Image (cartoon, rainbow, N blue to C red; front, side, top):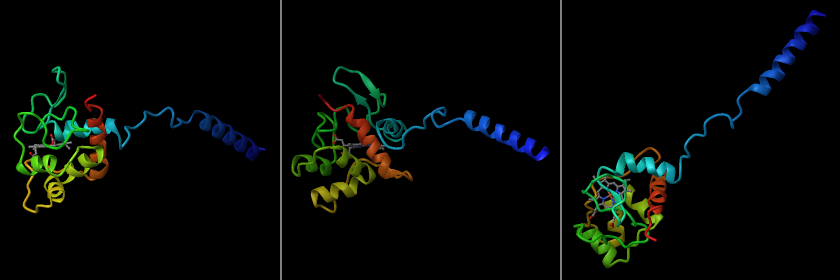
Length: 158
Ligand code: HEC
């Protein structure tokens, strides 16, 4: 009798608990680990100290007045070393002008993880050196590089 009562109680508690247990739909969705949203965070954390994203009409999307690196607005689809008035390294200028480097999500992702190594590969010159004194080396660098490239793709010139 008593056991039956306890068992019934346990069953009721179990059913109610199951019904009210928060499901994944109730919990806040975590930020995706790959994609443009994650890329925006990566950009603000690592790239914005040197790069701005400013449209030709003056609209600023990120990076404030950072001047160390070229403006990355419209970088996807553009050839390497092509921002008017920016003084690129000879390596990056050559990569774009003589070796046909076009910035795509893939080439940007490879470049940001090892700028000098990447330019050496493109120019086949093992003394080439990028002026970009930064490598994306987070514990999830490959994903973060793809994400930041996807973020930049949103500012491709149309
Ligand atoms: C310490 C400053 C610095 C940081 C941080 C930095 N960059 Fe750069 N970046 C540069 C400089 C300087 C250049 C020019 C390189 C050259 O001339 O060789 C450059 C060039 C580039 C280019 C080539 C642009 C073109 O017009 O050809 C891309 C793409 C780029 N950076 C993306 C990024 C991304 C994405 C990040 C963040 C993950 C980042 N950079 C972080 C300084 C920086």
